[in-house]
Image (tube, rainbow over all chains, first blue to last red; front, side):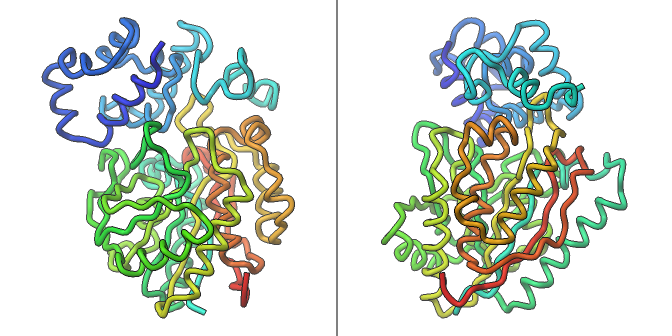
Length: 117
Length: 277
């Protein structure tokens, strides 16, 4: 997994309209500049918000990518929930910082219990 | 004394971008009215420039080179980096105050290793506050960011030192300077739990902040903050820095956890300016 590379690409995409144009025109070309796994490459190409969240992309980066893809706010939130259902808990990044095997959602459940529902 | 105003306010993209989705418009409008009062208070202070202590969340820096603290010393700043339609704030140019910013930076550097940037880009973390506090973008702005998203994060005792150093630097200047810290308290922004707010935690923190309870404020640990206040809670750094700069007790002018579509508890407060810190 190369979460750093995924996030670095999205960080640049979010801030640079030229990179946004290049990504729109030829996704493979610009993504070849980053050391990505096939799963990461495919998630970026297809705009798979749910998988990118599970891979560990920080929401402060991911929400801008969703806006760039013209995904509405509530759809964005649901896509992340669907991603967890489909792919499992968050694998890396800031949302796992409370424990080596505890996801953001698990941490919240511990903290808030049934208030999450 | 050249620090003439110090306060705090919340920021979040939903405050402007999702204002039309609020199901409690009366509370939203009370929040907006409090922000407008903050604008009036800053204008009445005679401020020549506004320092905004905000949270770095990948508008300017990434983990290849992430400063703990950075000040914008350019003659202008641009923003928002976000899609304008999404944020409901048009892309614009904000005047900076380079000579003053460099003087402040040189002073702060005596006690805090402060990075600087002449090419500042503003995201919602600064654009949302400016949208309310200087809507015509006619007040020079000096942005200061604290890394609040890319751990390891600067510890709270250094945050306090940064705020005090900034205050001392302001006091050395002939200009009148206003300062706001802008961040969330508990929140889980841009995650599936967006909209969750731990109101009890927020109110406890705000009480400590308004009362300048330095031991309590410096005791916050990121593991605890993450568990109880989410990764958005790391932004208490910006609020603590503002309190340290002011030195005086605060007055909480607005707080509500009843605007979850904004994905943050909404707060507005101002501090008394202590004679010295």
